Image (cartoon, rainbow, N blue to C red; front, side, top):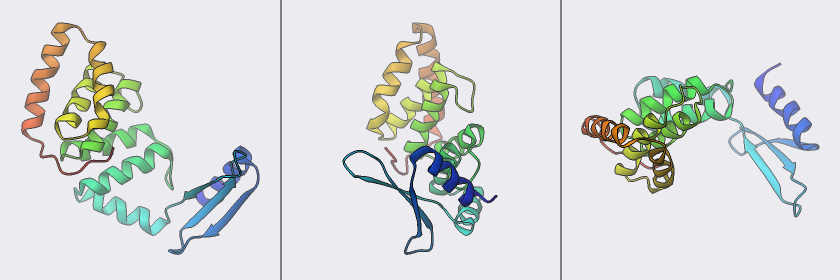
Length: 174
């Protein structure tokens, strides 16, 4: 069973009646009546060519492609759901300055998704995201920082300074 068939079957089980149609660009779209105020939810499934092209770009070091690939693995959009692979690509993008990837990597550390749970690492990466201009990371940073001792905060601040010297902020995905 290919991923489109699998997704459509899973969506039908979760949401009931589904309408699968090709979008303008040929990408399959699944539409489901949500049951609330007759609103609809639409998912866009990436096609195989899009996934391959995105992976090639990510492997060539393009931070926005690395971010997109990380999100695809995090959500299981067209690829197997894999937090470890997602964290890998978020880290790659984060190290190249993507503030959204920095925030998301911090969140994954805070939750222990694909990486060992660490409030210190969560604090470090969300702090770097804030320094890079991602205001959406402030509350997450503050929460993680509240879990650390004064000594752990000092150590983390030193690491933040070291890491940030090598990172140039490039874009924000809030």
